[in-house]
Image (cartoon, rainbow, N blue to C red; front, side, top):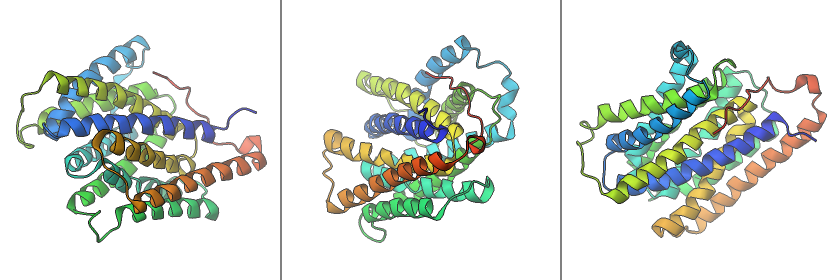
Length: 306
């Protein structure tokens, strides 16, 4: 039986979250030395070179006027705002903590999809998403030492990213995903150059640090491409909860790389999050069997691929 567009989208999202979390790990190591603007610029220079060559080779840069399409432009605004807020908070929070705060995004995106895109969200799926967010609250523990001013900055990043994801779903089918990934990378790089001075100026870098940022560039390219493919593949209200898998990656890397041992609350919250994602997958399979072929989700984009 062929996979539904929602199942394919969820698989793309899991891959994207793995790439982004490994990128976050390398970026966090770099952020201990350099400021967010410099990080965006140097990482972006590597990423822009790679993705521009790929986009040129596949012909995805034809029709540069697509940059000014309202949904492409709105997506860029959300991406830039979310990236700046995230990188500003990253050096000041454990990787698992900031990843936990960002897991508010599926709930925000699902609400937006129901309110602004007209997607049908059943009560069971709402309960699964809210339960997953409850797992996030168990980890963050608002009002206790797990939550601080930088967590608020991370939540602002969530708001920007929700705008980004909703805009992604409304980008016309004729605009290639690889084109969107390319212009996003270029805009983030330019933003980094413009914000180096406000963030404190240029800091000399070691060769090891440059290698970290080169690796982060490759990972963020995979993340950009697969998250765009995911959000354009099926229903946002189904796919968005699979962002929760980023937390599992973050907990693992926090232990392995930074030596941050998760406490009982962290593990309990992660278990709730995983359970909510698995239930969402189960509900999709149940609904998918009963959904007539003519009522399947809108036509998906042919993946550009990396």
